Amino acid sequence: MQPSTRHAELGPDFFDIVAPAAFPAHILRYRNQAWAERVGLGGLTDEAWTEHFGRFAPLPGSFPQPLALRYHGHQFRSYNPDLGDGRGFLFAQLHDLQDGRLLDLGTKGSGTTPWSRRGDGRLTLKGGVREVLATAMLEALGVYTSKSFSLIETGEALDRGDEPSPTRSSVLVRLSHTHIRIGSFQRLAYLQDAEQLGRLLDHAIRVAMPDVWRDDPAERAAAFLREVCLRVARTGAQWMAAGFVHGVLNTDNINITGESFDYGPWRFLPVFDQHFTAAYFDHSGLYAYGRQPETLLWNLVRLAECLLPLAPKEALEEAVSVFVPAFKAALPQEVVRRLGLAPRGAEEDAALAAHLWAFLQASHAPFEQAFFDLYGGSARQDRRPRSPSHAHYEDEAFEKLQEVLCAYAPAPEARMDHPYFDRATPCTMLIEEVEQIWAPIAGSDDWSGFYEKLRSIAEMQEAYSKHVLF
Image (cartoon, rainbow, N blue to C red):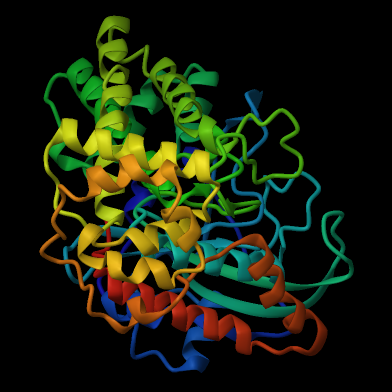
């Protein structure tokens, strides 16, 4: 383990030192052993793990006390200056032993802070289970996501309006490259504190993207914004290719690395539907599947506005302008990657993606089943008659897509002989499945479905030979 306290360099104007909640119980439900090994914590016993990630005994060499970070944000496009870490904190920082990059260990459900806004600072066990499932599935699908590192049930009864109460409690620890978000910059712009804004910008570049450093301050701000736009565009394209709907794309939920994080009412598409929403309270469909790209751009424009004290408007507008072409270029690349095909060029890959979306929209074929059945292109077309969706591939809506697919060869890294592809159906994570996993946990403390689903996701990740997209 290589611990760090880099965030403390910003000084006390950026966070509040807080104490974790004292929970009545600590039952370890999930530990991410693969990522524990990667950050040098794989050798911890379960007892030591619980001491650090349930009672929050400091990791040697990192923060002696947790830090609740300060930020603002637009929530459903209404500005809120009263945000901040209300039920979480930055617990520790450490380095990835593979590439040396800085990683944050942040919490969700770890108790009240000055930013709790009359909330209890807790996380329901169901919410923790859902986030573990979301991050595991997204990582397997090749989406740049935070990693659920630990989930501990904490023995409290919580009252919630959106699930049967009282309900069980938990504390989650997530691993990510940063917790600096658009809202971190919005707070300083709101306070008209250009000096601290510049300090945050310089810190963010040094720890998260040192390659974009420029000696000129204005050029530095524009280069930073451009890099954030490129990263967010890539992640947005990955969401769309995965059929994923985040649900709450507020500016405080978009961080500067482009890393997808903070999963509340997320959903995966059953079928291709641009209007599909994840949050029951998103009555206008603001954050619907098909509106995610424009929402990301809207959020990035808010970041650009924050940087106006540091760089000319024209330079910031030019930086933001990279988002649309970057997203349009990334989406076909992600579609081709998900289909296990070797790219043929920007124009050809864009045509393939367009024909795939047209087929999915016309046929209403199950979204993930289609990617599974078409994986490897014509090299695996013999499996389509055995698919539950075989009728969709016999319809005329499929003819043009089939013609385009025939021009593609499998990607060299495609593992089409993996046992995963002998299945009739792929691993999926539809809301009905999540509820089926949760019901026996709630009813009889039966976790077998949860662990079985994680095993299935791990098999899928191995089959797709996904490299962690960091």
